[in-house]
Length: 265
Length: 263
Image (cartoon, rainbow over all chains, first blue to last red):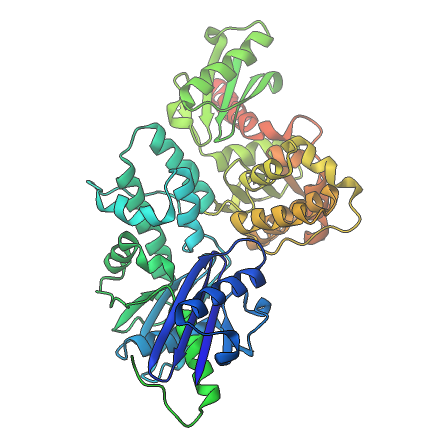
């Protein structure tokens, strides 16, 4: 019984193909153009890697910002539920999940079965979302993927005085004009985003183990900044970026075999 | 006996010269990176217009974001105090003053005798500040001054999905790509601006008369939208440019210093 999960976010599309024994393949591609095209493309890539075709997939669950536009999904699930399910499957000790998406952020409290107990969510303000990183990376002429490595070279602590992305961008332009060392600016950026996300996360009680999901979790600078602001160590998931798609695939597995609990890979 | 008021904001710098309760010179320039430089230039220009020089100023009060960097002032006073003072001079019946700066938004409630009862400032979030309109005007490719007029022919204003400047900007770009008429997008922007201002104004509690200062007061569409949301008339300022209200307030305080007390 092969199933799939497809997570179409605002910046990237993710697909995961699973069976009862675990993950068979996965793919991540940037969203360009229509969400539906991205869904088709990312799923095609995952199927190719697994050596299967669409007919082999018994059930597919869609999630993410673009979940309404996934033409081949049999069902949709919220991102919150999928991230919860995925994270606990990846690491059964996880009780708190912090997900920084391209245009939102969430903190989710889960139980040992991966069921959501409580969550807080921000999509009203761009500060504390991946968009903050994206905009400032553009200002600094860096790619999103470079931010982590650049911040690792930071030599001294610098604090941004603005929380608003629009004002922070102006502040960073003047820091650049003053010749401030770019790694210090990037580290300050990470701490600013972390501060906002931590303020959100305190809306639920952050319980160990806590992890970070989403593509932003691959940014080591952001990961460390969040640890430092929260004052605790974060558990590192093996596949943070596809976590939502993993959760979606787990829901799909449940649909096709309600009596059989998925095992761990 | 010249009294000077100098208001160095984040976007524009303003100077006002007064002589016995009358404005005898005023100037607005775009702020430079150095507040001190902005101050020198804007005051220099205001003086030159009336054929005055710096030596003619008996007392000068500085205000605004860059007030501590103005080289020629004898005193600095908060923007809140200066705006309230200036607004009351412009509209003597004003009890509620809404001032939109380049990167902040303030609402002040003034008692009948002119003392400040309550004020609230937002300088944390760009939404509801001049910066919001500046970003949007740039996306639309119109000037800040045009933004109020462009929307006048709107029949179906768009509703922006979010108050956040970043998300609203993405929304405006989407509307542009979908070929929504410029007037309808501009109207949506002006409405969004007004609704954000209304939240701040309602926070201090509206007392009539209401007036608006700062450059955004010259955007007729924002003022009209604000009136609709608040359900009160906003008194139009005709005595002078509403954008120089803070500098007027500073100059009035300087006049008081010269004459040795409130007149």
